[in-house]
Length: 520
Image (cartoon, rainbow, N blue to C red):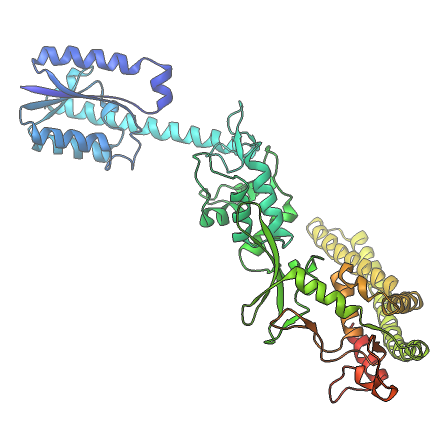
């Protein structure tokens, strides 16, 4: 006749900080001697016996399997009831399971429970009930303390990528290696410099690895980008309560809350900001130039992962790629071939004046409407203020405050719109100066302009498309009637008109300028 034994504590910390396992081990050994049943195998572990955790306990499954293979085992010796189970439901279930295998559960420190009389059964039920109740109370206290820590700004859960532990439990600090790499990747996505996958590739090429030395997967990277922890907040999703969503954490944020909202919108697909790549001055033809097939060109940097890079354009239509350096050289050549007609400057300003006057009248009408609206808002605000002063119902006070706040926001918005709209003359002078400066020999500097100005200059100089053909040459089917081509070829005067690259159906200069200006 033989036996097996179980010695258990609930957590690894208990194994390290007390001598419970040693005491249990001593008791089960003495009991085995009294029963004259040598212990064939002993399970000594730190595993919780909480309600809902017992059906799939690995130790119990191993014990039952061992007993099936070793028919001489007649006892499972444990120190006390709560060392075997803290769950009334499964306590009796597993006692019965072992009994079917011919094994009796024997309690070393509670011998009165090992008989089968009614008093023994009642006492056993009471002890199991007390063990489960004690466990529930402990869980409640633990959860209460845990929630208090979270509200105080700590994060007593697994560590996030880019951070490392400190001496304070639940408080993490930036990892000096991973933190800046992950932060840089996030800001690449926010500013539109890289897509999510491109940012991950760049981060990996720069040496980012998880704490286990593995490359970060794209699905895990997307999960990281959607976690507000990196914006300095704490959210515990498994606690289904808004009380624990977006709490201010004590850790150092990787990005601001505003940046996080931008990042989340991009990753979720609610906002596409990848076109911001076209704002990069190294790709002036991004979304402006077209491929010979008619598709738009977008700029990107080709990398081999070893530090080598090559700037290129890719057609969104046919997918053909062009070397950006070659295209830019040919673009500079094309820009250098045009200049302002000598006798067109006066006519240009006159045409702009005509268009401006029409636009000015529209703006003045808009200003009148805004002034009337502003006066009405100020009057309504005063009335609400008087009602608030005479109000004697405290419950209505928050309502009046909200209404006043809305009025104040609308008034400030209209005042700003009026300020920007009333400075018409100054806007006109700035626009004319900019246009003439651009047309008067400034085309070669086109690449250095901001995207908005590049677009305006493109419309002003090239009403048609700027096309890159399959041999990477830059051409356009039409230039503005106020421009002319410069050529070094000696041609007869009658042939000078052929230098104007126009297509059939081009409108007169004044009509075209009106269309351009209203669009710009």
